[in-house]
Length: 145
Image (cartoon, rainbow, N blue to C red; front, side, top):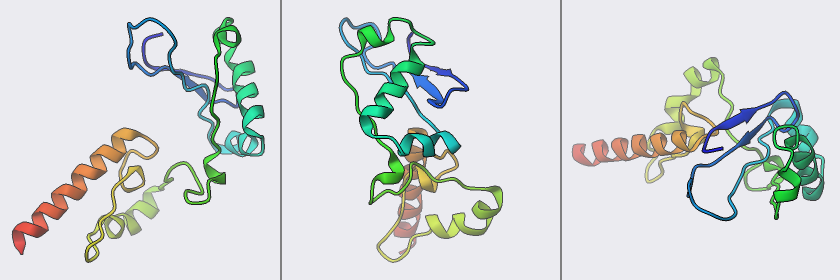
């Protein structure tokens, strides 16, 4: 697999194939699960070892060699990380209309950027676009000063 995702109705949600070093030889990195909704609660109730085992068991459906080629893994339940308490922003059209401009507005010396302050929540693209928007707002304010 060279980049992309395999989506599934299993609790792992998807398997993602990063395209870094696409044609290189040797081990590669793979995102073995990206659970959302109710599945994310199920996964967050497991230990990291249990999450890895669930991802391996469910990933074997796509790739029979999955477990044999597995070297090591890391499993993070974002809702259990105290300074994050969740994976990504989850806007509705109503909450975005009501709060988004306030969130991205410059407040004194503070300006926020990240996937949570974008229209592409949970993705690096959103974080990058948000940072460009923050820089544009900051530059505009500096020009007006």
